[in-house]
Image 1 (cartoon, rainbow, N blue to C red):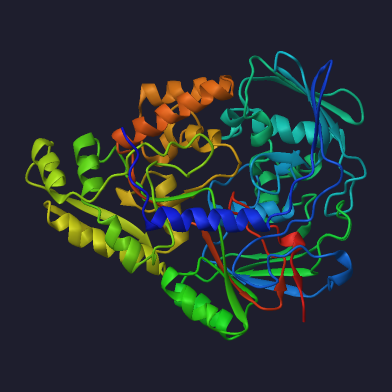
Image 2: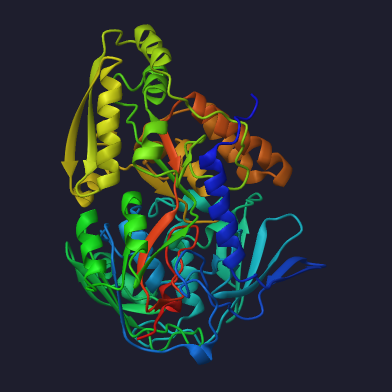
Length: 550
């Protein structure tokens, strides 16, 4: 297929990408080849700095200019369900977990790969099956106890074990993990697995204290202990998360603030009122219609940053007639994305030509579904429900954007004989139902990648055998070919991966796994005194770098 002509959306997206990249600190990494394989090391940890629309908020800051202390408050629309890193799959939990826990690797400055974290360096054997890590010394948990190699091995064995972890598929065929000595860790694989270093950054691979977890996993989930920049003061379900500075944190001069307070505010308009009234320092997930209004205020700026994020309507293929590919294709053709682009997103997003985020190996030449109601009617006529059907759609309460999308869908789908019934649920209930396959359509609405490579989401969304019962991330999409492409990509070199993952993109679009909508950026409204706020492309925030100029 030939690529579609460039449009205004594509140019806007490219402009955002270029702007963000221009503001990012250049990563400083040394890569050298040695006789034993590949050694990667990063001389020192780079302070994160962001890019965006807010003056001063995305610029690099010397430590001499930084004001330490204070409380940073940030209203968000998703609350945590569990704070044990191995448990959740919801972003409400995941993005808070990253503030409290460290992993062996971390996302690098431009989100193109990973950099050292608790692992200072590593070597890879020539055959790609043995990874040897040098582990940072002097690291302390939030309770003051030292992180030991026993804790590191325990944490990794916990996530590698398919019987106890839903995330073991992210690490290939692990043969074993062991401490070689007090500073050296070895992970052995049965066969090469290219994404291993990327995936060791993922939240379930966080290093936890063995003693505390073995004392009671359920209690640990509500009162977690990590090595990260912040420790938990209070987890008030339905209200807020309150974090405080980890005084013994191993990164010099981090975190910069003493406290982070994250109130759970589901309603978009209420979050905006709180940032306007000065009740919070920041508010995330700003509706596109409000961006210009907030930017017009002297003391507020909306920072837009590119993400590895895909927005779409989830479909449960186990619910008839969504098991019919012609029905799913019809819904895609009947979705008026051009109308949404202008009336909801104000041309600040890009129409998606994939069923997952735009990442490495993304193919421009794969066609997005255009708005074609006649084609949609034809497909319905050829489907198992030629006279139409009723489609229940779940949307999260308070999410203005999704409400508007669902209303446009309701109107458009009625033209092809589909009667949309919209149900509003709070986001916690909606996600719980979704994770129990208790939905027909909607419910989740977007996904972000936890790692800088595409393998995690490719496996989660399209490998039916992966992720311990999530069945292609709760869609019940079961394609033998998709599973083969994902698994082969994990074993392959870069050239082969590009072909395999490109083929996967075309396949899942043809199969209409979801209703594909948009590639969307992060939108955070910040008071003018907030400095060095950054959203990495994997969608969480480096709150350890934030400081307050007031």
